[in-house]
Length: 427
Ligand code: NAD
Image (cartoon, rainbow, N blue to C red):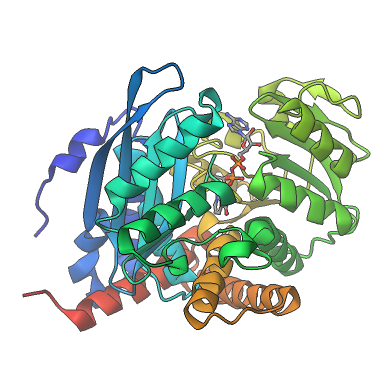
């Protein structure tokens, strides 16, 4: 029996948002779960959602209040794991969706974690460094009651970085009275971070794209690649595609879009974006309208910015053979159907961008043992785990005749619900 719950009130039928998209994805996987369908409602309800007030003193002496969240969607397979996002549009419903996708991602790649996510509704670009540190420390104090190395381990996401993780680790450690490096991942190397973590998500996008290209007979050398988002994920992926001999023909970020059919000079573009804050104004390519980005002829399209970027309105214009989701939730279910009908292969986020959490897992393991691995070991283990996960999903898609997304959800949700069924209900 399913029962209604207040979370449904977050759903506007006209614009279901990320949580609504996730619920539709679960509905698509449910018929493939056999006897585990008995437990499927588990997937539709976050285990624990914490909403906190984050008051800080601004530099001008006034007090500002921000809303923060930490959602643990599922912990059947292990502690919660997922990033923290600082963005003016963060909401509880969005964090619920991102936490749920972490449960699916960690299970799809077979990491011993559940799924969690956090965020603060703030535009961090408007804060000074001191204000950002005070915001981070107060938020970390507020969520300290639910996080910990054996409970829930945050990591970076949009607009958070190694420095933010260092502040969270320090704040948590002050509460504990001892240094607890394993409470967050994505930390600086000097305080228990892992080699290869900073680049891991973008590297994973590239590794999975290479495996998918081989499956569909696409030769990556000289292939045209378009990337949306030139941040931690898209920036690294763009560089690795270029180093592998691809032409990165179009890049879009929050400030603008640039195009060059012969291929953009990616290191120069990255340097420009770092200095100017955006790709806008880059002299080595022509500026194009944001909407035109989606119809640029290319072989591989990597959405690596925010969710719901590919919808019914632009999916029909996409010219790529392969879409590799660097971002979380960039494609709506309607767009999935349009792309599938047009023969475009979509490698879902839960596999394509799992490189970051995989190396986060390595970081957490290294912190426990206080024994650190070489970058070669890390990159080799990362590639092996991602290619194995991709191959398993590819085989499932062939067997069940589904999209790669539904296949990834079948693999992952089966693992989550098997754990749920084995553990049973408490008390
Ligand atoms: P980031 O903040 O480093 O970069 C975000 C990029 O997206 C920037 O280039 C920004 O300009 C661009 N962007 C923002 N709004 C945009 C818009 N409206 N249109 C076009 N571009 C826009 O963030 P990130 O860490 O690279 O994360 C990007 C995506 O990848 C997010 O969906 C995140 O959840 C996901 N992700 C990140 C990691 C990680 O390890 N960082 C891991 C898994 C998934």
